[in-house]
Amino acid sequence: IAIEFAYSFMENVEIFKDDPDFEIFERVLCGHVHPDLYRDQIEMLQALEKCCNAKAVSPSPAMNAEPVRQRGQVLISMLEAILRTMFPEKSDEMHNSLRRTLDAAINSTPAITRKALPDCVWIDELFHETKEGDQTLFVEEVRRQHFAEVMACIPKLRHKLQEHDLAGPGLVDTQIVLSTLRDLDPDIPDGTR
Image (cartoon, rainbow, N blue to C red; front, side, top):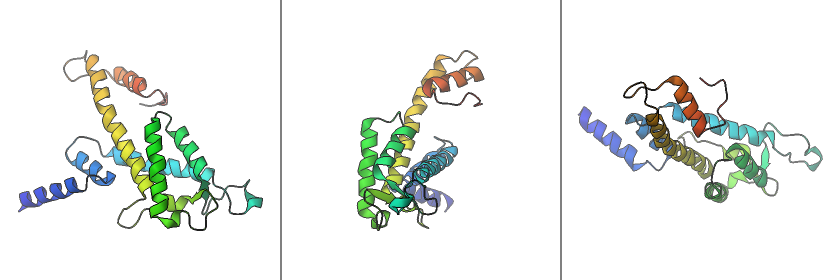
């Protein structure tokens, strides 16, 4: 019975792999990625939401100089600028995909723009997650792209580390690992260990 359950479980995970949660879960179960990938995505989304809240506009034109913290709105053009600033390495194609899914999220989730200022979205609605774990199409696309970028980076990292496999088969010096990571991501803070 345990084998049948495990098989059925994995089959169902495979069926819903288009959802970033299921895809990460499947890769973690198979040992292809570390569970920290999920935490990294959550932290990235929290940072994105925090940036949006920092640039929130107030509903009253007289108060536009003061950011609204409780239930803010962000201009769509500001959101696009935040995305380009937070993700400068993304291709134009990926940024265009984020814009298209933002438009689709706005069209499929009217609460995102209901009673919002013109060309604005409600930040809390854009990043809303239901009790079932469903997120807006926009958030799902941000997560999907993040996962794809991580998966594309793994072979590059593996290849670069294999070039420096000087300490023996499968062994690499920690300084080589750090320099290789910095080659792949120059924005890694100096104090990273």
